[in-house]
Image (tube, rainbow, N blue to C red; front, side, top):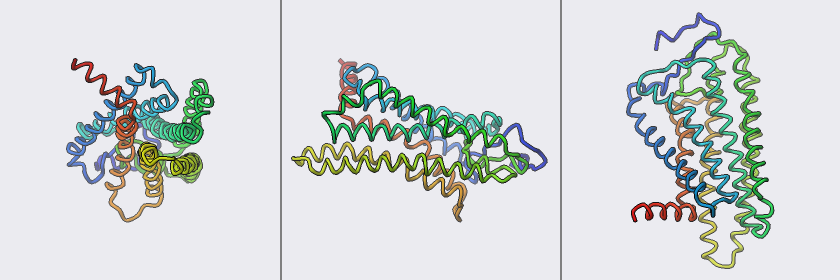
Length: 315
C-alpha cells in the first residue's frame, strides 16, 4: 500500500481501489458472501425476465416495471462486482481514471433509475388498489413505455454532472480510494480543491430527487393502507396488506440505508472505516438480491408460473 501513497502527481491516470480497508487479509473470505449474492441476484433477476417474457398473462404494467427493476439490478452488479472480485482475488486494485468515472456514472444513474421505478410501481399499486376499475385505462402500454423512458432519461441527466464535475477537479493528494468501487463522494474527496459544488449537488440528488421519490411513495402507500383498512373482509385485508407489506420492506431497505450512508460519508463519526465500506457495499448489493425474492417469489402469478415450469420439466 505504501507504494501507492504518493503526493507528487497531478490528475493521475489511474486510481487505486483498496477493497475493504483494514480487512485486506480476509478479502478472499469476504468474497464468498459476495459471490453467493451475485449468483442469487443473476439467477433470480434473469428468471423474472424469462417468466414475464414467456407468460402472456404477465404482460401487465406491474410486471413490466418489475422487469425494469431487474435490468437495473443486473446493470448495477455488472458495473461493480467484477472489479470487486478482481480486487478480492487477484489484488487487481488499479482502475483507469475514465473507467472510474464511468463506473461512478453507472452506479449512481441506475440507483436514481431504481428510485424512479419504485415510484412507478407505487403508482401502479395505488391505481390497482384504490382505483381498480380505472387501472387498465390509465396505465396503458404506451404510458408504461413513456414512464420507463422518463425514468432512464432522468437517471442519466441528473447524474451526468457527477463525472463531469469530478473530471474537472485537480487530484494532487493521493489516488487511493478506500472502497472497492468508485462512489461519487469517495472520488471527489480526493481532490485538492474546493469541492462544495460536487458535495452540494450530491446532497441535492439524494434529498431533492430521491427524497421527493420517497415522499411520493409514502403518500401513495398512505392512500393504499387507508384503502386496505376499509376492505370488507379480514381475509382480503390480510392478503392485500401482505403484498404491500413486502413492497414497503423493499422500499425502506432502499431509501433509509442510502440516506444514512450519504450522511456518514459527509459527516464521518468515530466508526471504523471498514464498517462504513462494508455497510455501503451491502447497501449496494443486497437490494438487487432481495428484489427477485420479494417481488418474484411472493408474487403469486410469478410463483405459480415458476412452479408450472419446474413440474413440466419433471414430467
